[in-house]
Each structure stands twice: as structure tokens, then as C-alpha cells.
Length: 363
Image 1 (spheres, rainbow, N blue to C red):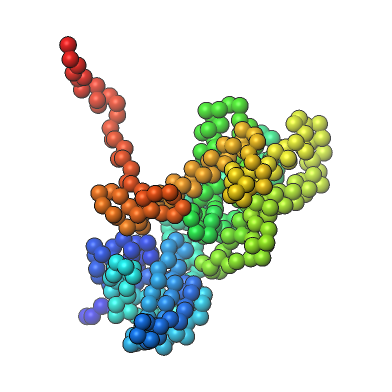
Image 2 (image 1 turned 135 degrees about the horizontal axis):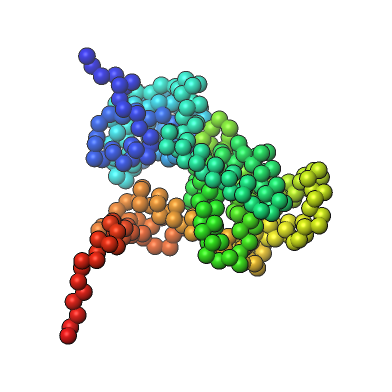
């Protein structure tokens, strides 16, 4: 009995890139057509260049006019959902090539399953969002706790779809939740080491520092495409974030619970101003878009936590997808300043296992 495309193992795009060279056998993948462009070869022959996205990664599929699928691919609209079964070959310079490909449109239930992500991605989003919610609930300052929980209540679903950036780090559906949760974990540890820090303010600053990206770097509800918006282009996520916090703060002050805040110290207005300062200064330099420089301990720490998490994500992505130049050296990942090198492995075992080692010195 001959094998059909439905019998092929289904992989994500990231998995395909990892196995295409070492295990060149047929696989199928599901993705959304993000771009379907018309181009010509150097000989003037037409071909289609499609960017396919499965929410975690993307690949470019080139379909030339001699391909039996050419006319079918030509009619595919941007945003279409497809399954592509093929013998995948890593061509090196041009990436993955789909040989003897078969294509079909996805059913609605398959689209919804793909939008939800694979099991690992769904679990990571659940854990990260739970971390954010629990740390917001744990704040002692009722003003910061209230405005944080109101944000999650009103914008939680949109938050779960947002990316932390368009290109460089956590640039994927759910990436902002992942970025914020990891920053919060880091912030808690730093606040333990430096008791002078206002942990509630720092946690709230982490939550809100990129909240404007819900309108600058957000995915459509039923798409892996991140549209450009006039709000994002004309105002930017820092200004949008400060505007959102002011709106939420006004809502909190108009609520019944706010009557008990009038005698609190520091005052409501001081707390609001310090939170806005964290949002406005988190890029660290005016040249990088911050309207003001960090001027408080929490603002400085937030800036560096943001930078650390973003840079480590760039390293992770580079180790996963970068071309190896030789002996653990991989090509530069923008905007990191140089080629990256694989890290030193962490030694396994415990210190007690080393007790028998004698240190020999000259007498």
C-alpha cells in the first residue's frame, strides 16, 4: 500500500529546519500564507515567492512556473491557511526547498488548533500568564495591584496575542507574555538582593513597560500576521503605554475602593508619576526612543532587566537557527554586536563529588 501525504509526520517549521539536512524524508507542515509575491528569474521566467508562518517561525517557499502547483499557488490569497506535504531539502543559500509537494487548504478546526500553538507553546503561555497574574495579585501597594489587575481583566486576551517586538526578540504571537513573565522573575530576584528597591513598583513597571505594544506589535485575532497600525506608527508604544496607564488609573480613582487611598503614603499621585517614569525611561537612552532618562533605582533596574532578557532571547534564537562558521562560532544575530559563540556547558554533579580531588602545590 503506497504512502499518501496524510501519512507523513507533521512538523513545525522550526523542526523542519532542524531535520531537513540530517533526515531528508517527506514531512508535512501547516502554516498561514503571510506573503504571496510574483517575481522573475534572471532569465525572465515568473515564479511565486511565499512567506509561510506557523506562529513560531517562518520559511520562504519558491514555486516556479514549471511546478504543477504554480497556477494553484498563484491564486492563493494572503492569509490563506495551507498544509504542505513534501520532501524537504536544505539548499543552503536559499533555505528549505519543497520537492514533489502536495498542498491543501486547512479546515476551520485545523486553523484554530494552529492558532492555539503546539502543546509546548500552550503550556508555556499558561505558565507565564499565571506567573504574571500571581505576582500582580501579590503586590502590597493596593494602587499598583489594582491597576495591574484591571489591565489584565480588560486587555488580557489581547496581551496574550502580542509580540514583544516586530523582528529582534520574542517576535511571535504570545512573545510579550513570555518576555514580561521572565522579566518579572528576574525582577523578584534582584529585589531580594537589593532591599532598597520598591518591588511592587518594579513589578508593575515590568508589566506596563511594553503595554503599548498591544497596539503596536499585536497579531490579528485569527491570524499570524502582525499588521502595521497608525497608532503604532504615529504615537509609538511608550506614549501609548503611558496613555493606557493614565486611563486605567482614572478608572481606579473613580471606583469605590479608591476612597480608602486618600490617606496612603506615598500619595496616589506620587505612585502614578513613578510608574509613568518607568514606562517613559525603559529604553535607557533618548537616542533609543525614551523621552526621559532613568532617574530612579527602579527605572534603572527595569531598563537593564529588559535589555538582559531581550539579548538572551537573541542568543537563544542564534544558537537555534544561526549558520555555524566553525568550532562553535555562529554568525552574528542582529542587533548583537558580533558573531556569537556557543556557551560553556554547565558542569553536572555536586561540589561534594569534587572533595576527593587533591590540589598539588610546589613545596
